[in-house]
Image 1: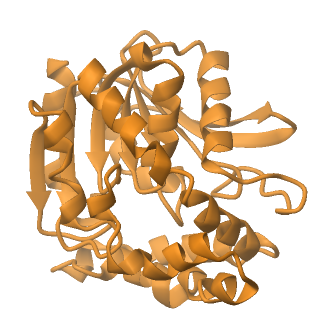
Image 2: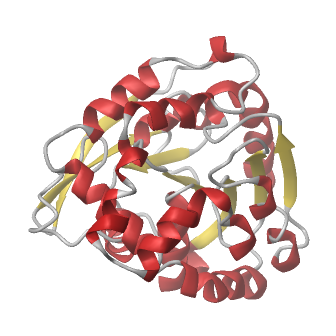
Length: 288
């Protein structure tokens, strides 16, 4: 019987903030960095970590404003994707991690790709799950957010408040899922409790605005794919309305050798398709 991996929960003080992370697996094994999406945290990887950690050294941080990391008021801390990438970079260096494969999902994609641009040779492989790097992937869902990018008015900011409500949080977990009994309600209860902390809505509004800074970097992300050709597996929930399937296929223009798996699920594909995704990932990681 294989030993059950121990998951450790810790925080690192970076730039005056306590940045929480989960870590598991052999300290001398190849590293897999797990980068979460909105509106969740490293909590989204709670079921995957023990599987990966049987063979790999896994680390999964929470960005500031998410999960168990500090969430200072948005007037006191500049929330943004480059800041998140810099903080993750610092955490990895302090943990002595200089090479890693990345699992990028939703917000984790621009965080991870900005991290890759800082030192591309560190990235040993990519696992892409509903994480966008192409304009084809920003469709109808993004129209009100694009309006806010174009006009930073209070009216356009307030138009996005519905994106941090319980209704939307639950939608992200359940829409496009055939068997809802596979989805734990703990997900949206957990995420919404953190979204509802005083001041957190404004943090998320700042991040919706800052997401617009990722789009001009798409050509640099794509150049990283083409020039460095990291081994890549793409597992994508085809029913996702936030990052739809149209965002998955363009990766093959720049990474023609990538493995592509389109799954019959929604945004948080790990929640109902872990039994399909985990074997694919272990096979992929064993080969890179």
